[in-house]
Image (cartoon, rainbow, N blue to C red; front, side, top):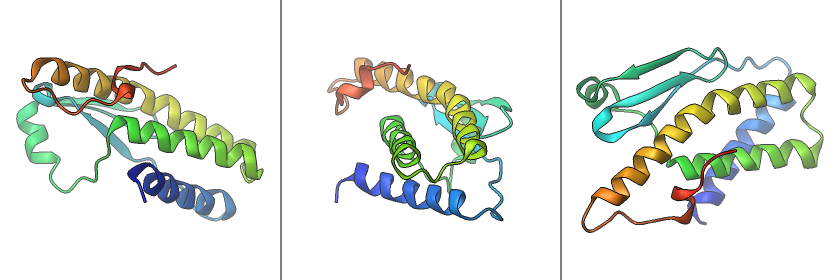
Length: 138
């Protein structure tokens, strides 16, 4: 099973649990984009709180985090959208939460992609390149 399918299945399963269980509370969580030598840019999933973390602080703080490439996150986000469109499991409130999540995450996903492009261009030999590393978000 490729990484995209695994990430999509995990997020679809999580999304299904969220939308099918009205009593489940989805908590506001922080997500961060690793910006290499610039540290990290963070946002919360629902409240739009933002912070930047210096490289030295990020090196200490990121231990224990679960990470995925920005492209893989974008793929998983697309899978959540498709889940809502094809299953009719997402009521209006859920659709609004998904849109809020996407809006808040878009900022750090863009920063992560820009940092990766910069790293690809500056290293010799370059990092493994994925065409999506050079696509911008809508």
